[in-house]
Length: 285
Image (cartoon, rainbow, N blue to C red; front, side):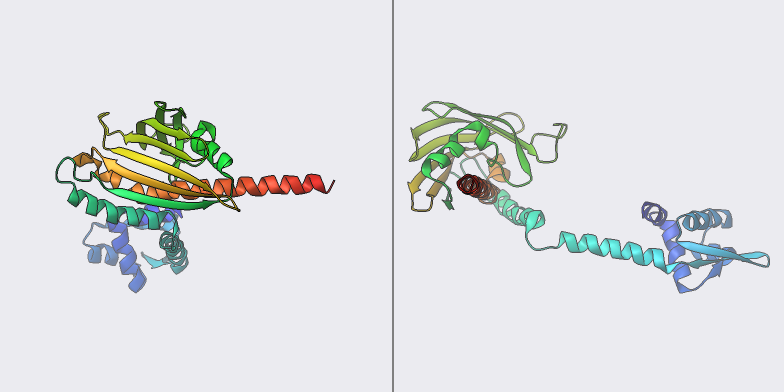
Protein backbone atom coordinates (compact mmCIF):
# COMPACT_ATOMS: atom_id res chain seq x y z
CA UNK A 1 0.00 0.00 0.00
CA UNK A 2 2.83 2.42 0.81
CA UNK A 3 4.41 1.81 -2.58
CA UNK A 4 1.14 2.48 -4.37
CA UNK A 5 0.55 5.71 -2.47
CA UNK A 6 4.09 6.89 -3.19
CA UNK A 7 3.75 6.09 -6.87
CA UNK A 8 0.41 7.86 -7.23
CA UNK A 9 1.50 10.93 -5.26
CA UNK A 10 3.35 12.37 -8.26
CA UNK A 11 0.98 14.46 -10.46
CA UNK A 12 2.68 13.30 -13.65
CA UNK A 13 2.17 9.64 -12.72
CA UNK A 14 -1.41 10.32 -11.75
CA UNK A 15 -1.96 11.79 -15.21
CA UNK A 16 -0.55 8.63 -16.80
CA UNK A 17 -2.83 6.46 -14.63
CA UNK A 18 -5.80 8.44 -15.90
CA UNK A 19 -4.74 7.90 -19.51
CA UNK A 20 -4.21 4.18 -18.96
CA UNK A 21 -7.61 3.86 -17.31
CA UNK A 22 -9.11 4.65 -20.72
CA UNK A 23 -7.14 1.94 -22.55
CA UNK A 24 -3.65 0.37 -22.79
CA UNK A 25 -1.24 2.69 -24.60
CA UNK A 26 2.38 2.69 -25.80
CA UNK A 27 5.03 4.88 -24.20
CA UNK A 28 5.30 7.27 -27.15
CA UNK A 29 1.57 7.97 -27.26
CA UNK A 30 1.42 8.41 -23.49
CA UNK A 31 4.24 10.95 -23.67
CA UNK A 32 2.40 12.88 -26.40
CA UNK A 33 -0.92 12.91 -24.52
CA UNK A 34 0.76 13.87 -21.26
CA UNK A 35 2.78 16.57 -23.04
CA UNK A 36 5.99 15.21 -21.55
CA UNK A 37 9.30 13.93 -22.87
CA UNK A 38 9.46 10.21 -23.56
CA UNK A 39 12.43 9.44 -21.25
CA UNK A 40 10.60 11.07 -18.31
CA UNK A 41 7.40 9.23 -19.19
CA UNK A 42 9.30 5.91 -19.29
CA UNK A 43 10.73 6.54 -15.81
CA UNK A 44 7.28 7.34 -14.42
CA UNK A 45 5.80 4.21 -15.99
CA UNK A 46 8.61 2.09 -14.57
CA UNK A 47 7.90 3.50 -11.10
CA UNK A 48 4.22 2.67 -11.49
CA UNK A 49 5.08 -0.83 -12.64
CA UNK A 50 7.38 -1.42 -9.65
CA UNK A 51 4.51 -0.39 -7.40
CA UNK A 52 2.22 -2.88 -9.12
CA UNK A 53 -0.13 -0.26 -10.51
CA UNK A 54 0.57 -0.96 -14.19
CA UNK A 55 1.84 -3.86 -16.24
CA UNK A 56 3.58 -3.84 -19.62
CA UNK A 57 4.43 -6.04 -22.56
CA UNK A 58 6.53 -5.63 -25.67
CA UNK A 59 4.79 -5.60 -29.04
CA UNK A 60 7.33 -5.37 -31.82
CA UNK A 61 9.37 -2.23 -31.25
CA UNK A 62 6.85 -0.75 -28.85
CA UNK A 63 6.17 -1.32 -25.15
CA UNK A 64 2.48 -1.21 -24.25
CA UNK A 65 1.38 -0.32 -20.74
CA UNK A 66 -1.94 -1.24 -19.14
CA UNK A 67 -3.50 -0.30 -15.83
CA UNK A 68 -4.04 -2.96 -13.14
CA UNK A 69 -7.43 -2.39 -11.49
CA UNK A 70 -7.00 -4.65 -8.46
CA UNK A 71 -4.42 -2.50 -6.58
CA UNK A 72 -6.56 0.59 -7.13
CA UNK A 73 -9.63 -1.20 -5.78
CA UNK A 74 -7.65 -2.27 -2.70
CA UNK A 75 -6.52 1.31 -2.18
CA UNK A 76 -10.05 2.59 -2.66
CA UNK A 77 -11.36 0.08 -0.10
CA UNK A 78 -8.70 1.12 2.41
CA UNK A 79 -9.56 4.79 1.94
CA UNK A 80 -13.27 4.02 2.30
CA UNK A 81 -12.60 2.23 5.60
CA UNK A 82 -10.67 5.25 6.86
CA UNK A 83 -13.51 7.57 5.86
CA UNK A 84 -16.08 5.32 7.54
CA UNK A 85 -14.02 5.27 10.74
CA UNK A 86 -13.69 9.06 10.73
CA UNK A 87 -17.44 9.48 10.25
CA UNK A 88 -18.56 7.04 12.92
CA UNK A 89 -21.11 8.56 15.28
CA UNK A 90 -19.77 9.55 18.67
CA UNK A 91 -16.18 9.31 19.83
CA UNK A 92 -13.28 11.68 19.47
CA UNK A 93 -14.24 13.06 16.05
CA UNK A 94 -17.69 14.12 17.20
CA UNK A 95 -16.11 15.81 20.23
CA UNK A 96 -13.63 17.58 17.94
CA UNK A 97 -16.47 18.89 15.76
CA UNK A 98 -18.49 20.04 18.80
CA UNK A 99 -15.47 21.88 20.15
CA UNK A 100 -14.83 23.51 16.78
CA UNK A 101 -18.37 24.92 16.72
CA UNK A 102 -18.09 26.16 20.29
CA UNK A 103 -14.64 27.62 19.61
CA UNK A 104 -15.92 29.64 16.68
CA UNK A 105 -18.75 31.11 18.74
CA UNK A 106 -16.58 31.97 21.75
CA UNK A 107 -13.86 33.61 19.66
CA UNK A 108 -16.46 35.84 18.08
CA UNK A 109 -17.74 36.80 21.54
CA UNK A 110 -14.30 37.49 23.07
CA UNK A 111 -13.98 41.15 22.16
CA UNK A 112 -12.64 42.63 25.41
CA UNK A 113 -11.45 41.61 28.90
CA UNK A 114 -14.26 40.39 31.12
CA UNK A 115 -16.33 39.22 28.18
CA UNK A 116 -17.22 35.89 29.84
CA UNK A 117 -17.38 37.01 33.48
CA UNK A 118 -20.42 35.60 35.23
CA UNK A 119 -20.78 32.73 32.77
CA UNK A 120 -21.73 29.60 34.70
CA UNK A 121 -22.07 25.90 33.98
CA UNK A 122 -23.85 23.28 36.04
CA UNK A 123 -23.16 19.56 36.04
CA UNK A 124 -24.87 16.68 37.79
CA UNK A 125 -23.82 13.04 38.13
CA UNK A 126 -25.32 10.11 40.03
CA UNK A 127 -22.34 8.17 41.34
CA UNK A 128 -22.28 4.49 42.36
CA UNK A 129 -20.32 5.05 45.58
CA UNK A 130 -20.91 6.58 48.97
CA UNK A 131 -19.89 10.17 49.81
CA UNK A 132 -16.75 9.03 51.62
CA UNK A 133 -15.41 7.20 48.58
CA UNK A 134 -16.46 10.01 46.22
CA UNK A 135 -14.70 12.50 48.49
CA UNK A 136 -11.48 10.53 48.23
CA UNK A 137 -11.68 10.66 44.43
CA UNK A 138 -12.26 14.42 44.57
CA UNK A 139 -9.37 15.23 46.89
CA UNK A 140 -6.62 12.56 46.78
CA UNK A 141 -4.14 13.25 44.00
CA UNK A 142 -3.57 9.59 43.10
CA UNK A 143 -7.32 9.10 42.60
CA UNK A 144 -7.90 12.49 40.99
CA UNK A 145 -5.32 11.62 38.35
CA UNK A 146 -7.52 8.73 37.17
CA UNK A 147 -10.33 10.99 35.99
CA UNK A 148 -9.52 14.69 36.17
CA UNK A 149 -8.93 15.25 32.44
CA UNK A 150 -11.12 15.08 29.34
CA UNK A 151 -10.90 12.08 27.04
CA UNK A 152 -7.66 11.67 25.07
CA UNK A 153 -5.65 13.46 27.79
CA UNK A 154 -3.68 12.33 30.84
CA UNK A 155 -2.61 14.05 34.04
CA UNK A 156 1.13 14.74 33.95
CA UNK A 157 1.46 16.75 37.18
CA UNK A 158 -1.01 17.09 40.02
CA UNK A 159 -0.98 18.72 43.43
CA UNK A 160 -4.20 18.97 45.44
CA UNK A 161 -3.92 20.03 49.07
CA UNK A 162 -7.39 19.37 50.47
CA UNK A 163 -7.48 22.13 53.11
CA UNK A 164 -8.55 25.77 53.07
CA UNK A 165 -5.77 27.71 51.37
CA UNK A 166 -4.31 24.50 49.97
CA UNK A 167 -2.43 24.65 46.67
CA UNK A 168 -3.64 23.13 43.39
CA UNK A 169 -1.46 22.37 40.37
CA UNK A 170 -3.07 20.59 37.43
CA UNK A 171 -1.09 19.82 34.28
CA UNK A 172 -2.14 17.49 31.49
CA UNK A 173 -0.83 16.17 28.20
CA UNK A 174 -2.09 14.12 25.30
CA UNK A 175 -2.83 10.58 26.42
CA UNK A 176 -0.48 9.18 23.76
CA UNK A 177 2.38 11.54 24.63
CA UNK A 178 4.19 8.87 26.62
CA UNK A 179 7.59 10.58 26.88
CA UNK A 180 6.42 14.19 27.28
CA UNK A 181 8.00 15.33 24.02
CA UNK A 182 4.83 17.04 22.78
CA UNK A 183 3.67 20.42 24.07
CA UNK A 184 1.76 20.54 27.36
CA UNK A 185 -1.97 20.48 26.56
CA UNK A 186 -2.88 22.57 29.58
CA UNK A 187 -1.73 23.77 32.98
CA UNK A 188 -3.72 25.43 35.75
CA UNK A 189 -3.01 26.79 39.22
CA UNK A 190 -5.52 27.18 42.02
CA UNK A 191 -6.41 27.38 45.70
CA UNK A 192 -8.78 25.29 47.82
CA UNK A 193 -11.39 27.48 49.55
CA UNK A 194 -13.95 25.30 51.37
CA UNK A 195 -13.51 21.76 52.68
CA UNK A 196 -16.35 19.85 54.32
CA UNK A 197 -15.47 16.16 53.96
CA UNK A 198 -18.21 14.15 52.35
CA UNK A 199 -20.38 17.23 51.87
CA UNK A 200 -18.83 20.16 50.00
CA UNK A 201 -15.62 21.11 48.26
CA UNK A 202 -14.93 24.52 46.74
CA UNK A 203 -11.85 25.83 44.99
CA UNK A 204 -10.75 28.28 42.34
CA UNK A 205 -8.60 27.26 39.41
CA UNK A 206 -6.97 29.36 36.67
CA UNK A 207 -5.75 27.90 33.37
CA UNK A 208 -2.50 29.45 32.15
CA UNK A 209 -1.88 31.01 28.77
CA UNK A 210 1.30 30.28 26.83
CA UNK A 211 3.08 33.27 28.39
CA UNK A 212 2.22 32.09 31.92
CA UNK A 213 -0.53 34.64 32.57
CA UNK A 214 -4.00 33.61 33.72
CA UNK A 215 -6.62 32.94 31.04
CA UNK A 216 -9.53 33.22 33.48
CA UNK A 217 -10.51 32.05 36.94
CA UNK A 218 -12.94 29.19 37.48
CA UNK A 219 -14.82 29.04 40.79
CA UNK A 220 -16.02 25.50 41.42
CA UNK A 221 -18.39 24.31 44.09
CA UNK A 222 -18.98 20.57 44.42
CA UNK A 223 -21.84 19.39 46.64
CA UNK A 224 -22.34 15.76 47.64
CA UNK A 225 -25.60 14.22 48.78
CA UNK A 226 -25.91 10.58 49.91
CA UNK A 227 -28.61 8.34 48.44
CA UNK A 228 -29.61 4.74 48.91
CA UNK A 229 -27.50 3.71 45.92
CA UNK A 230 -24.56 6.08 46.13
CA UNK A 231 -24.04 9.83 45.87
CA UNK A 232 -25.58 12.69 43.95
CA UNK A 233 -22.90 15.15 42.84
CA UNK A 234 -23.77 18.70 41.81
CA UNK A 235 -21.10 21.00 40.40
CA UNK A 236 -21.37 24.74 39.87
CA UNK A 237 -18.66 26.20 37.63
CA UNK A 238 -18.47 30.00 37.33
CA UNK A 239 -16.11 32.17 35.29
CA UNK A 240 -14.44 35.43 36.38
CA UNK A 241 -11.38 37.42 35.25
CA UNK A 242 -11.81 36.31 31.64
CA UNK A 243 -9.26 37.60 29.14
CA UNK A 244 -9.74 37.87 25.39
CA UNK A 245 -7.38 34.91 24.97
CA UNK A 246 -9.50 32.73 27.26
CA UNK A 247 -11.98 31.90 24.48
CA UNK A 248 -10.18 28.66 23.55
CA UNK A 249 -10.41 27.45 27.15
CA UNK A 250 -14.00 28.52 27.80
CA UNK A 251 -15.13 26.87 24.58
CA UNK A 252 -14.10 23.52 26.03
CA UNK A 253 -15.55 23.76 29.55
CA UNK A 254 -18.87 22.06 28.95
CA UNK A 255 -17.37 19.29 26.84
CA UNK A 256 -14.12 18.78 28.76
CA UNK A 257 -15.36 18.97 32.33
CA UNK A 258 -18.37 16.88 31.38
CA UNK A 259 -16.07 14.17 30.03
CA UNK A 260 -14.01 14.31 33.22
CA UNK A 261 -17.10 13.75 35.35
CA UNK A 262 -18.13 10.88 33.09
CA UNK A 263 -14.72 9.31 33.75
CA UNK A 264 -15.24 9.81 37.49
CA UNK A 265 -18.60 8.05 37.29
CA UNK A 266 -17.09 5.17 35.29
CA UNK A 267 -14.13 4.88 37.67
CA UNK A 268 -16.40 4.68 40.73
CA UNK A 269 -18.75 2.23 39.05
CA UNK A 270 -15.84 -0.07 38.20
CA UNK A 271 -14.42 0.23 41.71
CA UNK A 272 -17.79 -0.59 43.26
CA UNK A 273 -18.25 -3.55 40.95
CA UNK A 274 -14.81 -4.94 41.79
CA UNK A 275 -15.43 -4.50 45.51
CA UNK A 276 -18.76 -6.32 45.30
CA UNK A 277 -17.18 -9.09 43.23
CA UNK A 278 -14.40 -9.59 45.78
CA UNK A 279 -16.91 -9.61 48.63
CA UNK A 280 -19.06 -12.21 46.90
CA UNK A 281 -16.03 -14.34 46.11
CA UNK A 282 -14.90 -14.35 49.74
CA UNK A 283 -18.41 -15.22 50.94
CA UNK A 284 -18.54 -18.32 48.74
CA UNK A 285 -15.28 -19.75 50.08
